[in-house]
Amino acid sequence: MADVNAYLSTLAGDARDWMEHFVNYMRERHPDCDELLYFGMPTYRPVRGDRRRYIAFSVATKHLSMHTLDFDFVIALRGRLKKPGAGKGCVNVPFQNADERAVLEGAIDELVARLR
Image (cartoon, rainbow, N blue to C red; front, top):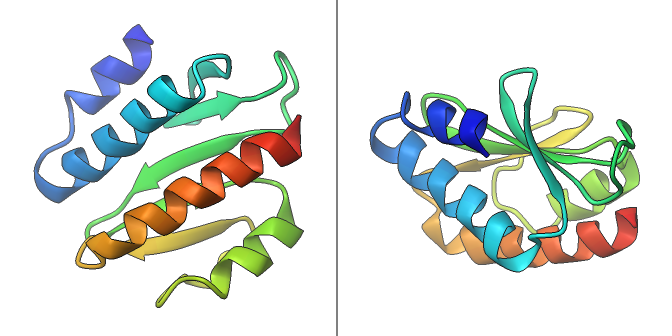
C-alpha cells in the first residue's frame, strides 16, 4: 500500500483524480486482493501470488487504462466503452468520459470474480 500511495503522490490533475478513484475503489470493494506496484502500475491480484491473474491501472496524458491478461474479457469490455483503444490486454477511458467510471467499476467487480 505504501508503494501505491507514493506513486499516487507523483500524479497531478485528472491523472491523479482518476487513479485515486480506482485505487480507492479496489481498496474498498476488494480489500482481499493483494495490492502492489508492479511495473510502475497499481496492480491487484485476486489470487495471492498468481502473477497471471491481475487487474492493473495506468494513466497517460488524456486517459486511464485498465490492464488484465484475460483477453476475452478485454474484448467484451470494449463493446461497453466509447473509445476503448486497441491494446491487446487493456482498455482506455478518456478522462472526459467520466460517465464511464461506472462501467469500469462494474467490469472490475466482474473481473475479480472471474479471476478467482
